[in-house]
Image 1: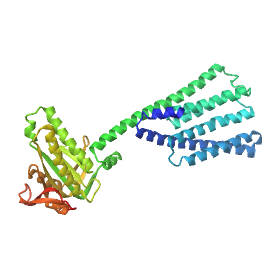
Image 2 (image 1 turned 90 degrees about the vertical axis):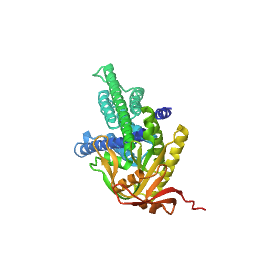
Image 3 (image 1 turned 90 degrees about the horizontal axis):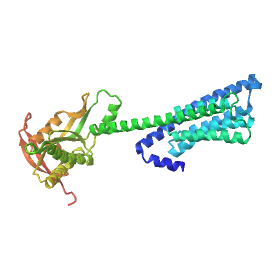
Image 4 (image 1 turned 60 degrees about the vertical axis):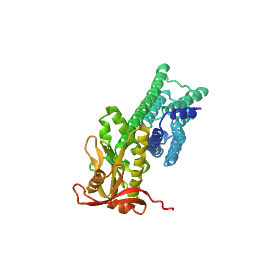
Length: 414
């Protein structure tokens, strides 16, 4: 019943948070058990000293109890070396907690040496220690506390052992127990609430960061890497520009201009994700995407070619749906680039180098509705794609360049 309730509660939490809390609880439980291990080792050393030098103070049953607790802790630590399911971690937590609280009480019960005032101190130390070291799942803490208290009141009362201190009013003693439990559980509850809020905020910020930067670059940025710049010897860069959009925007209200542009670029973004390409940025109605970084790939030119063909299809689909007559001019070039993160605010992952400039020239000197590629890109694709030779054209800032128009994939099965 208890665990079905916990499962329903977990259903309200994200899987990422559930996984984080499971890992955190296991790590903190292991830490608490290590601290408890050394604590009981000192108690074992104390009893050993008594045995050797002061036999009258030595307690055989207490010595055996300490050995049993240490054995249980060692077993628990070995069990937690591997990742365990949440239910197993909960069982280990309750077993560990009750081993300390109930087993020690059992020793006092057998020896009929129950000291209510000392038990209050023991509970306070134990409950607050647990809340500090394993501050997740307040329900587990509450169940642990109720188990220890239930044993104390039920078993000792049944055996006729006095359960209330003689020098402290019973009501004061009970009030202190209540507030010890209440504060311990409240601190665990508040910590988990704060942890969930911080996890959600961190998760949201990470998603936003991944929308701006490639995942590997975002991780490097999170690790406080000051300068992020890499050289890539072989990538393919695509520039695309929506022909006629500037004129169209002059006759439309601003919100409609943004809406149309958002519809088109959202289609391009989905295509970039399908082809596993890295979108770099948009500049007005121009779109820049690259293949082969930040993770190099041998088919970088092929992936960009497929992207370019799909972009033409996407703009045709948009025209049919929106009743427009837009086209895109695409330019592609292959070569080396430098990529990195620039800026302190609103930073961006960007590209530099002659390859980027040449791809831009392929687009600006291209033909509306066509995909123009450089000779370097043509050499990478000529075995798999059909081309139309455009010949040598004058390129601004460069000598004449031989370019080609990409028509589509070859039917190699024919």
